Length: 190
Ligand code: GLN
Image (tube, rainbow, N blue to C red):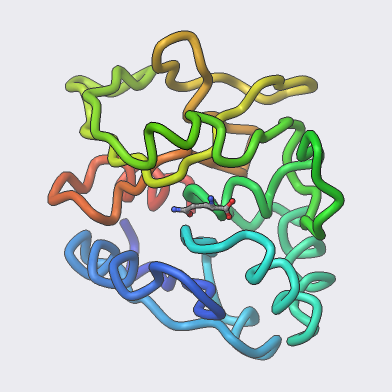
């Protein structure tokens, strides 16, 4: 790594503080993004978990959506976790909420069912030497990928992590564990 990478964490709503902490533990510089200008100097962007309809609404209200889409098209790495997955998806079955429409995925909201509000599981991730602990909180899963999207992890037959070139997403919350391997993987993309 040449110099410190600067990663923006979208801080409109949700679990952004935990992502900042994980990035700092990886040796990166984390900055909060709430204004368009704050997107300028960053090497990558994390869209955290939270409530995807709120995040979507605020992306429009704060006039960030267009610039994020443009930056993604010119190669800036973007990593969406949980609600961030929904915000990145091109399709949300049964919902017409706003999304950035970045990734060739269909993401189903709260897809593990109401009985299973949250759970943890060890996940095999393609290319990772060890399983990672996935914390799922009212999590979505990916029910369809197309184009260049590559599936990186499957849990009980459901796609929970995927990558499309500079775009990365997972259903769970890697920022809530002490395992930094997924944040490191993203930093390698940046
Ligand atoms: N269920 C939430 C949504 O649809 C996502 C939950 C989370 O990010 N932990 O926005």
